[in-house]
Image 1: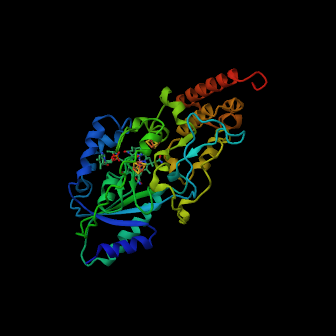
Image 2: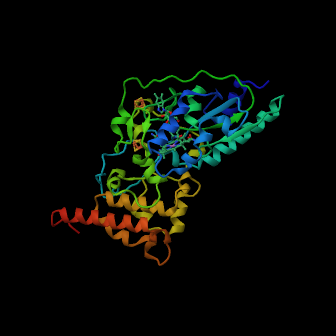
Image 3: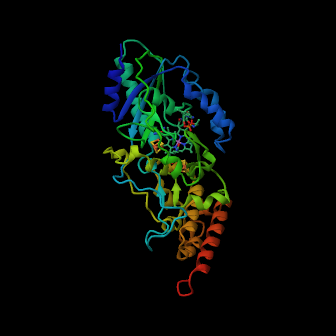
Amino acid sequence: MLTTAAVRIKAQELGFDLCGVAPAAALPELQYLSEWLAHGYAGEMSYLHKSAETRSDIRKFLPGTRSVIVTGTLYNTEAAVVTGPPLPVEPRSELDAGAIRVARYARGHDYHVVLADRLAALAEWMQAASPEPFEHAIFVDKHHVQERVYARHAGLGWIGKNSCLINPELGSYLFLAGLATSLPLEADAPGFDRCGSCTLCIDACPTGALVDAHELDATKCISYLTIEKRGPLPEEQRTQIGNHAYGCDICQDVCPWNLAPLVTADPAWSATPRDGASAAELWQRTDRDLHEFVKGSAMTHLPLAGLRRNLATVIGNSGDSRLAPVLERPGGGVKNAAPSAATPAVTDAVAWARERLQAVAAAAPPDEAV
Ligand code: B12
Ligand code: SF4
Ligand code: SF4
């Protein structure tokens, strides 16, 4: 019979840093989803409402599931922890005004693709190694499984007050993904809470999205606003976004369990540098060249118009009125080269950014005004 230990060894060979097994049972944390949705915390993520029934128990995702194999994959490639500067962003030099932040998880290749391939290889190996036939289904983020809950019960770590799964050795810059299977594998012991009296993540969140321990109001979260929210960003939240063009890591960057973050050597997660790129330079790209910047990464899940909306917002937050003229030149000013800039949410963000930068220029002493 296939054992949990054998599956774990194979998973590590395939590039997963962590692997454990949770029972397919009525786990206590699964119940929070319906409460969370009832609070309206999901905002426009209607897919969470639509799939709530399936998400409430993995046995609705794959009937007959007896074991849940959960993997954790370290994606961090940055040696030093860099927390977001105070918001709104103060330009620190001529060069870095308008430098964008891209969340660590989106800096490498698209994890949906990489991890699904590795899980398919694990499933194939299991089929060959198991004397008995079994059912299985892979889940990677977008599938209807509450991954953090099963990860905790597979012994990968605990769910922190910032709502992230934290491993005591590796921290929380981890992708989660796994396999539901009808095989009766031996379950691991669940991870236990090591947050103690710490509240650093709650205190550091610039938007107040962490309304309480383990309670995240996504509608206030920069990750939701920059990635999931379509159309114009709510006016009152634009300055809070600062220079975040895609996602946010602040509540993880401040976590003591990430203080000396491990860096992965896996080439899948190191790619073209995206974090720190110039919002002004990106804004002036044609749509085709802007797509080149995100190609192959999880950032492709955001339509180009959404990225432009975020870039215009970052430029507006840069506090550098010298960046205002670039807003007139999406696509380098070449006609029809940047159709995504013509969408209502983007033109709205541009008008807002221009107004903000004009106000900065007007407030500057005469010799500094442009
Ligand atoms: C929707 C979603 C989002 C939304 C909502 C986030 C959220 N906290 O729910 C938004 C867009 C904001 C988001 C942001 C991010 N996400 Co996201 N997201 C998801 C997704 C698709 C579903 C999560 C979900 O079910 N939410 C619903 C609510 C109910 O869950 P929850 O807040 O996580 O609450 C849980 C716990 O807090 C706990 N709980 C609640 N109350 C209490 C009380 C007590 C006492 C206890 C003990 C526990 C507890 O139970 C809940 C059950 O799930 C998962 C993938 C998946 N299929 O699971 C990825 C996932 C959670 N995201 C992930 C990542 C990487 C991120 C970001 C770091 C990306 C970024 N850098 O911008 C941020 C982190 C923000 C944060 N602090 O959570 C990873 C997390 C990996 C990890 N180590 O935890 C996942 C697992 C994707 C993956 N496959 O790797 N995400
Ligand atoms: S990801 Fe950023 S905005 Fe969202 S809860 Fe964490 S610190 Fe707050
Ligand atoms: S910052 Fe503190 S409270 Fe928040 S997740 Fe980390 S240890 Fe837990």
